[in-house]
Image 1 (cartoon, protein in one colour):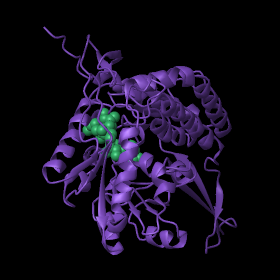
Image 2: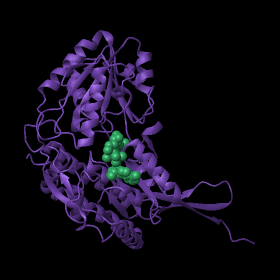
Image 3: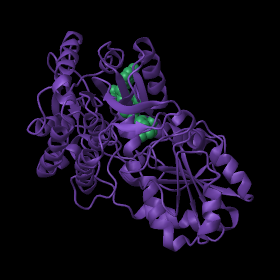
Image 4: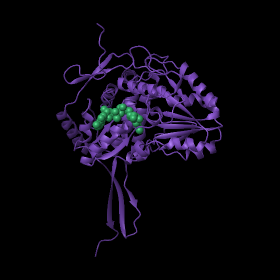
Length: 470
Ligand code: NAD
């Protein structure tokens, strides 16, 4: 009888669940399943640790700098573990560890809300001070477990909050190891990682001891988080799904941009909130662009992330593989053609061939919804206005890009995109100093840069008269 493949996150022994390697289907390890009553104790400890942590900004900054050093020193252990549970090539895991440390260092260096005078038209002296909010719940998806966790806990901790962090049950292991590494630099209970399957996240975001929920994940879960936080009126920051469009202009230099464009769609196996997920191309240039991308798709080495030759790993989990396969089949059944790829690859892992689709009906879900996988629909247009309208014509609004040789023209078109960030001849290149905020259903609130810090702070204003009252 063939051996049954272990389920991705099945309980293996009491109180633990299995985490599976998406490249092999084999277990990597188990992680603890937190019990509801234990969550109360975790939040209580985070609340108790807050008093000390909030009181000394200079000590906080020093601890965060030491934390960044500790993450870098642990890179040789963290990166392979991340690859084993997430699937991404080892080089990308190393880059993710580096970005995790960089976030800690960036927020350690920001001004943590020093008091400043306010202009007041009355004869009073007004001072604006910033106060931390209290214990923060941070919920993270499985595509960038470490760097998205750091994007949440680094500003929250720098602002003087304590954090309870819940990774995805598909990728808890590197985050658990990160917590151990950080415990050498941070006081006890300032950052606690809790692991488990749902309803752990739902319980955490509705916990009365939590004062700010910072969530990254899909739009449907984001709605559930917002509804749950309504009961406690905790602050909510939501970074949600994207369906970014890239528009190529008539004068685009395909040879010059094809590599960058390809990887903007396929990096991390397309499992990037800000990946290029739809490509609009002038009809006259369409065959040339399809061929350039299809050639790259066919030449890309797909395999286990630990193999140094691999450029594209597996999809992270079975439901995501099924979703991508379903959307691709749907498009092919509706008349689309695969210029490269088109389906799952044989073998035990969650491998899917990098796929370039043409002749895709505009209403196909692979165009209107987020595929979050290695499949790119390439859509021809004749009028640029129609391409801009199509790019803006979904409920998503995370990012977008315009590609062409005349940069002024490209910038003018980019300015018409309804999204949080628009790039020219690039996509998904983010600076730590910039605000990160999707429009429409792609997000609520602002992360990144000083805005990310202030999202974790409460303004507090003190008025005093210039002179003693008569
Ligand atoms: P998901 O919404 O399924 O899960 C995200 C996290 O929420 C996980 O930790 C999950 O366990 C937890 N969760 C599930 N139900 C919950 C509930 N009711 N209450 C609280 N937490 C709950 O998303 P995913 O499949 O892990 O990640 C993929 C999605 O994330 C994509 O839509 C992608 O675009 C999005 N994403 C967005 C950004 C961004 O910055 N905007 C970045 C990365 C990923």
